[in-house]
Every structure is written in structure tokens, then in C-alpha cells.
Length: 124
Image (tube, rainbow, N blue to C red; front, side, top):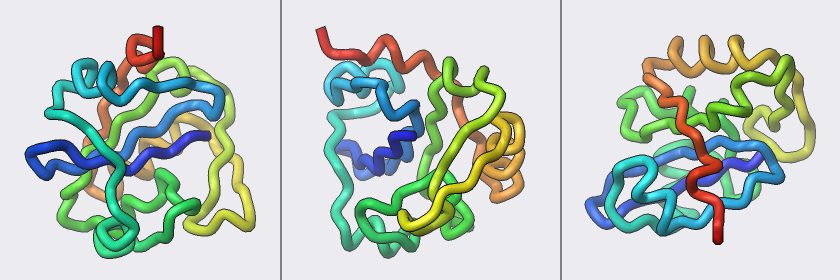
């Protein structure tokens, strides 16, 4: 799984969750998700907002964002998988769960994840 913590030019924050092999062009992604120009969020902001260090970003981080300041984007194709693997707030272990359970978890944390066709953000 690939998890990108991004900020746009308007200071909006995004957590983009996609299969590990998905290639993503940030310029195209901005258009696909309807954001301003995107860049990676700083390590300080990542820790402050989602409570993890770089390298440990995971969809489970939304539990540390009770104000729902981060918009969650889920790869639509990935959400058709029977099972998904992710790190549970640390990159030293991995857990397996269903795509529907991932969505339920994110929603239980107060977020409204958007399913997006991230193939449209692939580099040319």
C-alpha cells in the first residue's frame, strides 16, 4: 500500500491511499481530486496532524485526526480487493483487513473517504 500525506497550495491536507504499485503524478492528482497544487506535507505537520513519522503513514492515522482536517482519498480499484495490507501506525508490522472494513474504520473516525480513480493520475 502507498500512503501519501499531501498539502495543497491552499493549506488543505490530503491522505491518498493506493496500491503500492500505483504510480501517481502529483500535478495530475491535483486535477483528479480537485485540489490546488500538491506537495508532500512536512514531517512536523505529519506528526502534529496524524501522529506518525515519515515512513509510517497509514490509513489508520485518521484516528489521530479527530477534527477531520485531512481529506482521505482511496483508490477506487484498490477498494475492490478482497483484502488489503497496511501498517498499523508503525512500519515494523503489517495487518490484513477487508476493503470494506478499512472504509468502516475511516468513517468511524469521522472522516468521509472519497473513492477516486487514481489511474487517471498516472504519469504519461
